[in-house]
Length: 237
Image 1 (cartoon, rainbow, N blue to C red):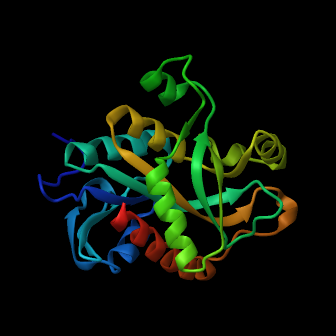
Image 2: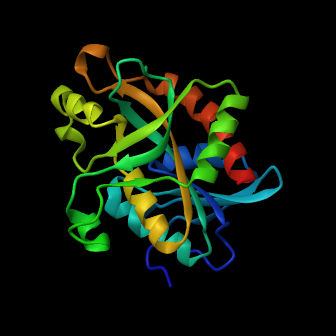
Image 3: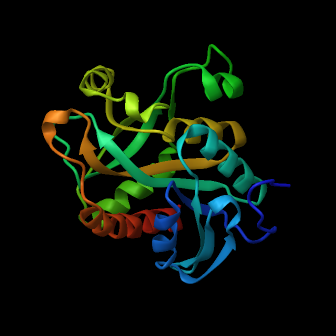
């Protein structure tokens, strides 16, 4: 049984939107019909309700790969099978701006750490999202006329080590965004037989010359617009 998520069997839906910030979880839960809170333990808020007549949970995964691994392992124990990470990211690409979205069809990471413990020292340093779930997200974002880019994200373990130099190296390696969790979610999903994808709100360009981080007020509207698209896609996957 889970040690950190104190929900009961049947409390967590097969489809789950996961996001880092519990405040965002509360906001997204309002988009569900008849949402109920099924976990508050350790600040890992989880709500379950319906969207388009389909059972969906909204869950907090915290910051970084280790926290996220614990949460999705325990959600999996409780019946979750399809995950969409909906969170924020910085862009590495010169043509992507704050307020745009990135649908991460794959994600890369540095070797070692949690990845070595789960997958071995010589495992690949990247992983793909589930293609069917990604296709549903693309369809949903297109239907809502939201500006998005599809491509690879770099999942960093060191937020404050990111710099313009890091951005150039990562972009040259084929990544268009940087965040902290997608690679772990994709790799662990393949290991456990789940499906996963992600949609990311770009809040800044990691190249410092491209301007400041998006304000909380600006971010608020993009969260709701993007969340509706995420829920549209997930409910049909």
